[in-house]
Length: 354
Image 1 (cartoon, one colour):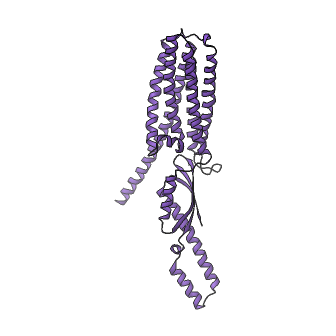
Image 2 (tube, rainbow, N blue to C red; image 1 turned 60 degrees about the horizontal axis):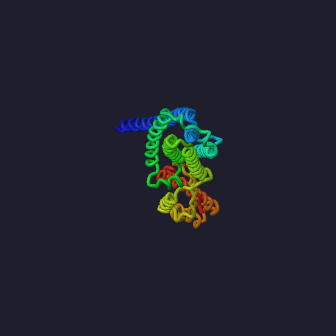
Image 3 (tube, rainbow, N blue to C red; image 1 turned 30 degrees about the vertical axis):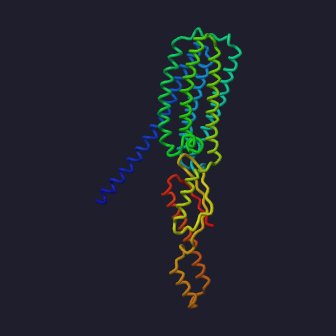
């Protein structure tokens, strides 16, 4: 019966590993599909811009181009962050996704905000040069299809973020969350849906009133939206790259757990650092209950040997001190093991004794 149970456990563990690998593979396939989809939408929007010379259509084309490039960078970051520890990177490369997300945010700012806003402002001074009489059904259909496709992706991203943010509020998760990749996808899709809707309104207004003014103004608005999004993403990733700590409630829970252990009298200091999503580094200084670490029976035996005068007391005291050092080291190892069991997100623990 015991052998059968052990076989079942081994098979179940292997099944879990297989499911995890399959899930990770599916995630990569989703990202690749998103890149391909965004690339097709970008091409379609550029065709629509060539047919209309619409500033807002160009803004949306650049927007989709930025989203496509961003998805590629997110894929690179996800791929690199999954590589394990090595001699060159002893703690792994979990923060790689933060670096690539930051590069993506900079690209969105300069390409999305800079180029789009510049073109929109330039269009304000050349309204007579733009013709909207060529606006036909094709560009409008392109935008409508893009709206529904990007709206669907936005709802999927919203569900994912809602699941991973836990009890944190949405804006709190943006400011203090440990996975800006999910936030980046959500914000990009949200701005994409809004941008397509604004571009569609711009085309219709410019066609109805036979003026390029609404088109130029909305292209500037779309550019500003991308600029704000880029700044938010840059902030959320930058804070993690420079060593942001975990939430105060997490640190408090770790402190309370440590102080509940019999050998720990109090926690002197505690510091955390986010290494990657669901990965924390902990540096903590504690003060032990010396009495809880003392082997009274062995000390009593050592004292008896010293009182009897049969042996030199110096070697006895040295052995006592050596045992104490080993006992402290063993207790530190036990505490670190208990911490990792209680808080699975702790990947590196540096415990110091006061």
